[in-house]
Length: 212
Image 1 (tube, rainbow, N blue to C red):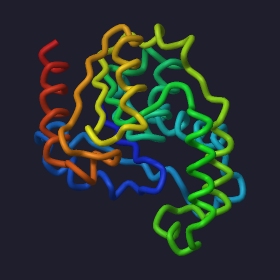
Image 2 (image 1 turned 180 degrees about the vertical axis):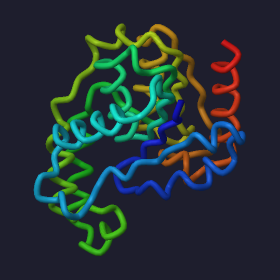
Image 3 (image 1 turned 135 degrees about the horizontal axis):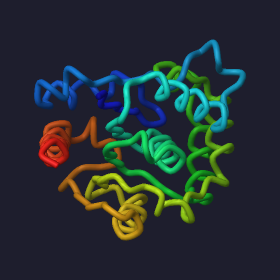
Image 4 (image 1 turned 90 degrees about the horizontal axis):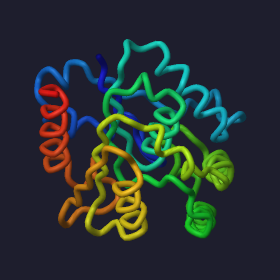
């Protein structure tokens, strides 16, 4: 059964390298880290197309899945879990939202607009595609579907990630089988800020799942 690590906006699959390398052998060997973006698909970039491609990718994997997603990756994981609860054994949501904060998305796009095109080169998306993707997520809201997620969920957030701490606390309360872990001193990108602490918490979580 694969462990699927889903990167965030502005990252690539390589962002998981440090964290995955510190996980137990059985988890590490069964880990997959999909690349969410490809330059050849840039013209069609939007959340519906991105989710459709992600769901198709998951559908080709052996089930049940253990999903772990950061930010955008967490949104994709949660979306998949509410639509396919029977296919997900566990889920780790890192700095993730379940109802998109429109004001924050607008601010993010303003900042994207001020950045040079070169800043987006390693993400697999150009500036326009990145802004278009963010715009297409504004209406996402899984509030009324969270009770469909029956699997154990580890909700994680960096102590300094103020923009997502509130949503993380709400997820712990609203998801039927969730617990929250706040990583001291870390920001939003937990796999970059605190790969060791992140791997330690994930290892404990996956061991609990294995023991049943």
